Amino acid sequence: GPPIGIYMACCMVVDHVRQRRQSSWVLQNGNPERPAHRRVVLESVRRNGRDLRRANAEFCADHEVVIAAAGQDVHALEYASNELLAHQDFMLTAAEQDAHALEYASRELLADQDFMFAAVRQNGSALAYASSELRA
Image: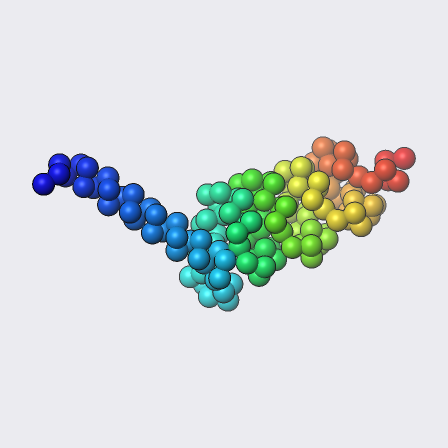
C-alpha cells in the first residue's frame, strides 16, 4: 500500500474539506439559537472574518459573531446588518478594535456629536470619519 505519511496526509485533506463543507452549511443555514451552530460560525469568522459574507441574516445581526469577524478583518462589517451598523454601542466596540470600522457606520451615527465624541475619545483616528458638519 501507499506509505503511511501519504495516507495520513490524504485523510487530513479529506477531513479539512468535510469540516469546511459543514462550516459552510452552518453559516448559510444554521440556527443562532443552537449553541453548536453558533460555535461553528464563531470559529469560522475568527479564522476568516469575511466568512460572514456567507452567513445567514441572523448571524449577520448577531453582535458577538460580527464583532468576532470584525476583530479578524474589519472589512467583514460590510456584511453586518444595518441595525448593527446603526447601533451606538456596537459601533463603539468595533471602532475600539479598529477605527476603520467607522467607514461602515450609519450616517446618523457619524453625524451624532455624542457618538463621535466617544469614538474619538477611544481612538483619535475616529475623527476622520465624523460627518463634515461635525468637523466644521
